[in-house]
Length: 329
Ligand code: HEM
Image (cartoon, rainbow, N blue to C red; front, side):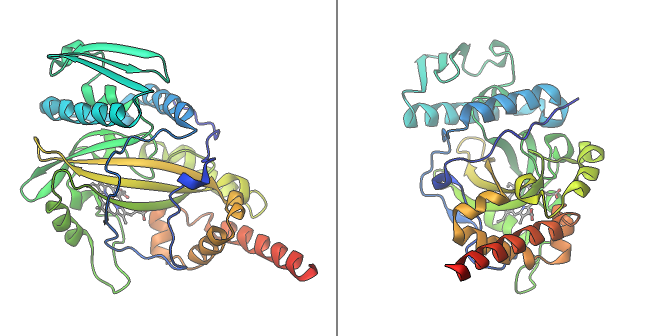
């Protein structure tokens, strides 16, 4: 069973990773070098997001967390990286005491203190990746490098758009991207080119990109619960789209792990209801322009085809209203 309450949206617009720079969006290799390589970020919604993430993980444990037994050493490497990042960026919120292999990790925001032996998974109640992931609002996926490809071997995913640890476990980069109509503006096929690019990512030099979608009255959608959210998309009308449809943006970060050589994929997912786009006229205009111009295959792939016309109509009406006010003035 799982429940979803739409009680979260981004309130600090300064930190919202608005995805569009031009008025028409097509797939491309849009990876950029990451400037601030520390992926731990405490937003005003931190506590709400982390508590919701934990609840979703409790409600659908099999769907939202998966790993292979041979990944524990790699998981400890990820735990170490995230603990060190958290403590160095937010010493007031996170502390670690390392006495040899005896570690104590404190999360002062949630008032939690845990002691464990680094490298010994039997000293934690959860697997190391699952344990540390529950201290941050991000989703985390570990892609293991083998035979010139990357395979999803550990995943903690609670904010998915057509994605789950359960569904995608074991898949290669190319298999995962098989359903994406991955054609660039020039008509190039992109999946293999991006896989080759990822092979060149070096430790200490992470990359980033932004992915976006729309979400109809939900936090996330995955294939396992399509019977629930599929029909709900038909409830969207131009009258309610402003409140119920959210621009869902994923800030994605890709880290080459120095010891395991795997790629850690970190996602920061943020939401903005369409009506809040009016707070930034430029965002409103760009989004309206992009959504009018989405190719059919992309809309179907993203799962937004059933309510895209209603969303565009909402934006059109709002634009009309704005024009009328401007004309009066
Ligand atoms: C290596 C880690 C990565 C993982 C685990 C990953 C995972 C995924 C997953 C699960 C999906 C949804 C696929 C489905 O429909 O079943 C997806 C979609 C997509 N991925 Fe990746 N991806 C990775 C890297 C990248 C990179 C580096 C790029 C581009 C430079 C990229 C571009 C895309 C795009 C454009 C989509 C379609 C999304 C949409 O239109 O909403 N991915 N990815």
